[in-house]
Length: 97
Image (cartoon, rainbow, N blue to C red; front, side, top):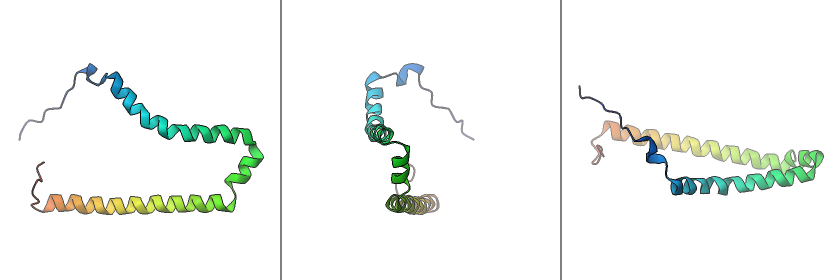
């Protein structure tokens, strides 16, 4: 049985400031709308916020979003399993890549 060696990286290899800055950009882009919604929601008051969250249209949008997320997850799972099975059980060129 061949020996399996773990890939080791020096501790300071990931200590790159521009990489941390580049990685924080998507976090800021996603977080900004959420921060804005929390800020605007805190200005509206509890009763108004409750009315907006539990109105019919908001619940319809939530149901659509959850249905879409479930459907996409199921489709990706099926496709991923099919591709993984195909690669494992057939002689596809580039398999060892």
